[in-house]
Length: 328
Image (cartoon, rainbow, N blue to C red):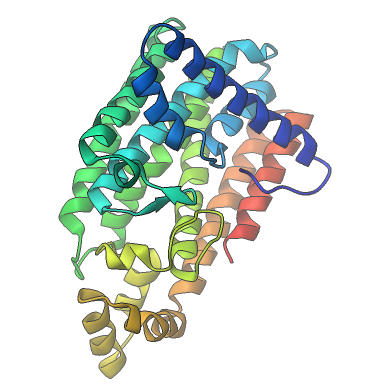
């Protein structure tokens, strides 16, 4: 769930509740026509929590660009959440993750075979929600999914690679995470019937938000985050070298650099404290935090430029400020 405070919190929490209600109702409807086994598997992960950032941002973008009918945007907002959750199920299998959102991952609770099928089922539900709306929206989602696949394969190739570049990592972030935020914003603009140029701006804005979100997630993975229900430094255990780690590789020198490479290439629990200390010493945390703020500032400027003042715009700005706070 989104943890929000301030004057805009009530509306944002209401949107999260609306999304949760929509997810539940869709699963109920699918279960009623004879797919109860698949639905039960989907419920385990889809309704276990989650920040619902993508659908909420999509709804707010739709509103701030002039959309008035919540029922018009809700199916596409739900579609992105179904597809996002499908990617998490498959990611967890690839990573052999034990927990997701504080509960056992689907392949741990059931079997890998069942989890793969459940992930496929979630993907299908996302496209099923989008298909009746507009073929353009299906194209937007399809392109997003293709980019995610390419980025996932690139991340697999980069595991354990201490020579990975910032460009490599940003390309993975754009494909795996930021593209869905960006595509959700483009879809919202399409439903609000804005111009092609405005849809491009919305896409770029969503991409900046998505990159910032992933960098925050990477920071929290290293520092620990009770909201995710995951352990500390799980990316390092999986051989994933995120931006703070790449900064440390690039800026540490001499014995510190050699020791750091030794730790991350054969990571163990006993290395956690010293590894984090070396990342801190290298400026890896600070540099990543600074990029988060730059990305959010760019997104905020785009938002102010493209949309007139409104409650929805203020609520989205509030959401970005909450994301900035989470970085540390």
